[in-house]
Image 1 (cartoon, rainbow, N blue to C red):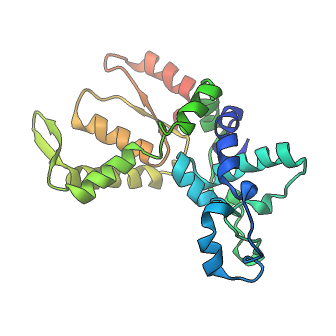
Image 2: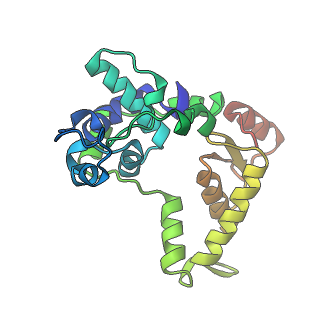
Length: 238
């Protein structure tokens, strides 16, 4: 399934996304056809959220929200929507000039989807956490960015050789992230790391997860034969 979406994700997020989207809108007149943007904005609460807005609320990528929404729409409306409805929502209309194929914006290798599909969970329980507001769009990368902006000089990482403040930590993580992406690594790629309990271990984890990678930890005593087997099993790309 494209865009890193699994059936479990559809079962978990589908009803919430459908409820938040324009499918449940209440229209007052035809402000959209008349291009009355002030009326459109005033009725925002009744017209549903855009895919971008829903993504920010539930913590998925916009393309993932769009795909999940289409699957649920097909269940309720019994029609086969064309891919060009991606990106619509909140009063938006189809615009050929502004359309961008999601395939061009998001790539994930089949090995990455194998990792994702191996993560089994109860969609009903996950949907409950989502509806109750226990799951919000918070990530480690977001926390790092927030602390670097708001408390840049405060200590973030204390270790035997000294400490790193939040600004220094984020700068180091960003450099490593760019370096890994320059190697051609993309979302879903597995990166193997064999490090002791040092600052570099945490920096590597933050950098790998920043571009959507998966960090595979290798126990320090492991040597050639063990590592060869584990790298083959995980299909690590770096």
